[in-house]
Image (cartoon, rainbow, N blue to C red; front, side):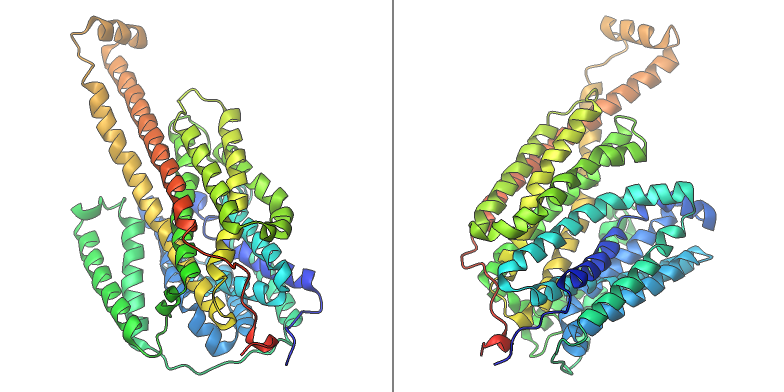
Length: 508
C-alpha cells in the first residue's frame, strides 16, 4: 500500500497552480476592451479585430475535452508545466505580432495550450490536498474563476491606456515561467502512470471540425445577422455534421479520445447540467450589465468595470470559510441557497430603470457575490464526487468544455434577445406617438426649442433608450426563473459528495 503524494510545500504549490489558472482565465477577457486600439494599430476594421477573441475561444474549446487523453499520454504534471510555459511563449508572440494575421494565429495557439490548464489544475489540486481539505482547494479555484474575468477588462483597459496593448500579453511571460517552475519543482516527485493510448483520429478530426465551426457560429452570429448570412448557414451545417459524427463515433469507439461514458455517473451528470446552465446565466449577467451601463446609462468602460467589480468582493472574503466548512453541510443545500440568491439579484435588476444610481447597481453586484461564493465550490465538488481518481482530469476537462460552450451560447443568445426585444418594444412605444397628438407636439416643442428635426431625433433616442431598458428588465426576469429552476436540477444528485479514494491509497 502506498500513501498519497504531498508536495514539500503545499501553500507554494497552490500559489503556482492558482497563478497559472488566474493568468489563463484572465486572458479570456483581458483583450476585449483593447480591440479598438489593436485594430487601429494593426490597420484593420473593428469587425476583423474580433477574430482575436474568436480564434482564442475556438482553439480552447477544441483543446478542453482532449485534457483526459493528453494527461493519460504525458502525465498531469508534465502536461501542466508544458502548457503553462507554452502559454507564456505564445503570449510573448502575441505581443510582438506585426499584423492581424500573426496575432490571430498566435492567439489560436495560445487558446490551444490554455485549454488543458484549468481542468489539470483542478485535478492536481484535488490530488495534492487531503480529502478533508479538498473543499478549500476547490473554493480557491472557484474564487479565481470569478475574480479573473472581472479583473480582465479593468486591467486590460488600464494597461492599454497607460502603456500599450502588447503589454496585456507580455505580463503573462514572467507569471507563466514562475508558475511552471514552482509546480515542476514542487510536484517533481509525484509518480504518474502514463499510457500510450491509440489516437482516435476520427474523433479528433470530427471534434475539431464540429466544435470549431460551432464556436465560430456562436462568436460571429450576431455580427453576421445569423441565418441571413450564407457564411453562418454553411458553418452551422458543417458544425452539425461534425458534432453528429463525433457523438456517434465517441459513444461506439472502444478507446474514444473524449470519454462521454462519464455521464453514466449520476452526480457528474446532474452537477454538469447545473454547472452549464448556472454558468451560462452567470455569464449573461457579466456580459449584459456592463453593456447596459455603457449604452443606456452612459458609463465609460472603466466606470462600468468599477460598478460591476463588487461581485468579486464576497467570493474573496468567503473563500476560506466556504472551503473549510462547506462539507459540513449538504452541498445541495448550499448550491440551492446560491441559486436563490442569484435569482433574487436578477429579479432586482428586472426593476432597474434609466435613472438608477451607481450605488444601487454596485450593491446588487455585491449581493450577487454571495451567490457566486456559494455556487462554484459545491457544484464542482458534486460533479467530481463519483468519479474515480483516474477519471478526474477527463471529467474536469469535459465539464469545463461544456461550461465554456454554455457561456458562448449564452453570450450569443443574450445579446440577440436584448437587441431583438428592444426593436419590438421600440415599435410598440412609437405606436402611441403621432405627429397630430397635442401631447407629442408639446413635448417636441419643449425638447427641440422649436427645431422639429432636432426634437424628432432626441425623442427617437429617448424611445430607443426606454426600449433597451424594458428588454434588459425582461432578460433579467427570465434569468431569475432559470436560477430558481436550477434548485430542482441540483437535487437530482445524491450523497455522498466526498471524492473517491485514490487507487494508490489502498483502493483496488
